[in-house]
Amino acid sequence: MDIFCIRAVSLGVLEKVLISHDGAGPGSGWFLDKIVIKHKEGEEAQEVVFPCNRWLDEYQDDGKTERELTANNDGSSMKTFLKGKSCFPTIIFYTIVFAI
Image 1: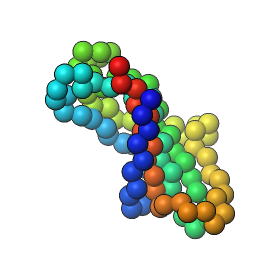
Image 2: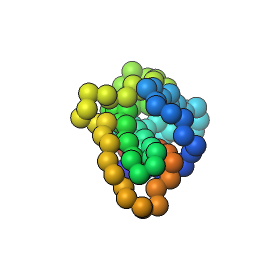
Image 3: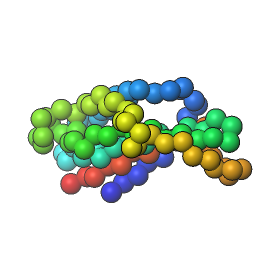
């Protein structure tokens, strides 16, 4: 399992994300579990989960290397929490990838 953390400026409330790769090189496909985006505004932080649970691989699953993911807004994966005065960037993207 690989986890990538990317710091970025605030993009506001996100409802969808588009993720892809160019498929270059042997074994370039990967399995994407989910994308987690954490956003902090003042003392309050919010986490939004974009579930995928699919392959981005031309030889696995449906052969697609691009996915448009929709935020899971049913309350089970979108939560608001307090972080106090911790060092927390404006927005963090966590992508969980399984490469086989």
